[in-house]
Length: 282
Image (cartoon, rainbow, N blue to C red; front, side, top):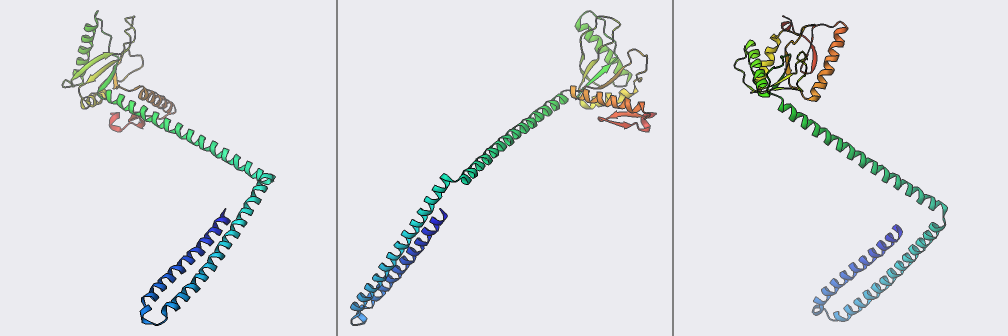
């Protein structure tokens, strides 16, 4: 096909050259007509010149058509030969089969790549949704704390038990010099125990602002630390999401493991295990 195209280009170039010559000749004729009155016998001379040029152009055109015909015949002969060999050549058939296999492999590879891309995109979107929900849950809990060790209220009705818990929280905050802290809500977590001597449920306390919550937690270090054998020791911490609780459990397990190996003065701060500062030890 490239050979045929090259032949056609050659013919087109020749025809373009002929067209240029014809245009040049016509311009020359126009010029000669303008000078007819200046020279005697100019018309006869011009007629002879035109006839000579027309004979030359006719010869060139005939030659161009002959060249084009020869080129078309050669190209057609080449195509016929190629078609015959393609139909009967085992080598050509083998090449075609290899090409088809490569195309199939490429299509399979593209399909796998697209599927992997979709899977990765879905995983990223799922992670983004999960992180967004986690952030929203953290925001909901940012003014809440959890207090452990507060005795269970003994009143008969839910409202009375709630008021009893509120009074207990007020007394606790007063002991920590936190009388200016506003409490929006107090909630006992979990099912009420049937046995009076059962471990008390934790209490969720929703405070008016995050700044007040930070103050409460900073004062919590003044509470008596939990001791072995002491019942209902009171301690409090930030209200954590399930993911945060799991992370804290892992940190606590690591902390205990490191302490068992002899490390001392370790605490958990900002989701890391660090050595307690000297001021914390006093």
